Image (cartoon, rainbow, N blue to C red; front, side):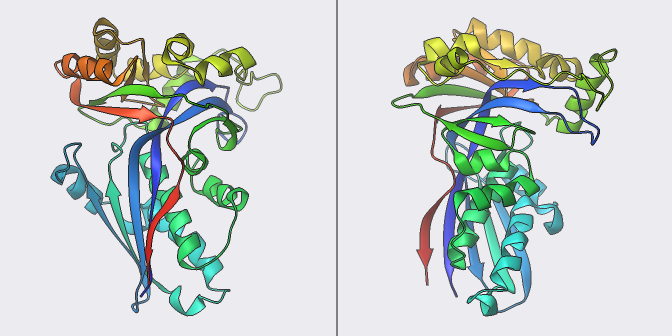
Length: 328
């Protein structure tokens, strides 16, 4: 039996600009992703039993097992798990290659460290790590562009998790252009909410609030403005320059559905954060600090905010999906 372990990062959106929905219901995006050192780890192992199985274990920041989230993930049907969907896409390719005899049976273990339903692309990181692991497991030799195309079909955030670093996403946010960020190190405080927030609900609220704008798919419907070169230079630079540039067009929609998140944003700023932002569609709040010590100070104060369930610290940018270990 062969076994490969790979990992992929969660993310924050430094900038998220949202356009009016197109005729197919999707929103064009112009977004800047930053990969964080909170990583999902996926181990894939060939088995003699046909079929694909998945086991997910969620971990707490201190290293213990998050039993509640682990039980929650156990209830997710395998066909809906992004790691399984990614593996099946790769199995179809492996079935035509030299490893065809090993492609029928696969066991997947996901070790989760990115918060679930927090707007940080944890599920997409599972898919990205699985793509990279299966590519190695079956010697498929797929390059980054091909993996990105496969990832794009699985979810809009998968390419960002494959790419890592800081990258500009256009289209549906899934066409990636890596950005140069030599020496950049951002320190983040991640404030988790007590409950998740549906991405679909947030976009629906965004559309409701935009009533009166051009109809979905209509000619002249506004496309999101891409960041300027100056904005990109600041976002990929030191925290003191990046902070004032943080923006998220979904903030009002997320706060409309979960008003208490406004209190968390205010608490983060009162605690001394350089800036604070709703991460993606929420409900996670990401606060930017000037140093690791500053992040620890903010985290201690933010942990007392009423709408905060748990606080993590993280750094970025971090590498994209990569193979960490292989056996057999």
